[in-house]
Length: 323
Image: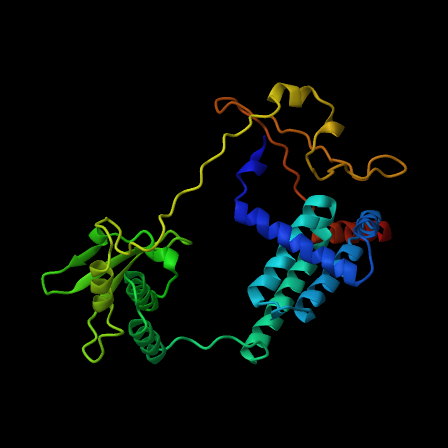
């Protein structure tokens, strides 16, 4: 057992999905994965790795699937996960290629952002309040059982809460409070971000179909049995059972094993050696002696001879020779 067991499941799924997209790109290029791995391994400069990731980024930006082109977040996530996957396989190529791959990721992100702003991808229009009114009116007019009214109330609350139905799964009746001035306050817990947020419920005096307080009243009135949940039709959110962890090989056995048998990727830090010996030498400096404050120490000071004194002495010798 290692720390890899604590990697979130969503992260592992994202890595697996990205690798599958990378393999589809290789199939489109008629290149095998083994050939790519061998080519990257034989290139110590990392240029083949950068060229492969550049082609993969172009594939993510131009490839069209069943639902059209990939979204911006999906394309950048695939590129980032494949990059990290290759770095794990070839750690010695991380330093020479990290900057160029980071630049490729930024270029892909900017291209997808401009493409989405330019309207090249068809997106569903936002649900306006008029659309919500039409939806709730249709559900009320065709309702036959209590669940139909509860679905209409759920759609209304989801529109006001700007969230998913799972965000309302933790909402209970005790989370709805009323202040002294008669204001209704609803507390939410976002499932994805685990953040607690609050929402002030304001009655809609013009139309009851889009009123959040009316939706709460309908949800409470149509419950089949009393319960703590505010919306009884939503399933209970059950936390995943944590599987027992395998301790794996003891540390003593790992330390006694041969280094080549350990599945750990490390970067070689061996310094290059020149033909005549070491590439660089360390220069040593003598240590100065420390004297006790009470002892006298005579320091030999070197007083440089002034330049004019040299000139004068030479001139004096010349005069003496003439005389």
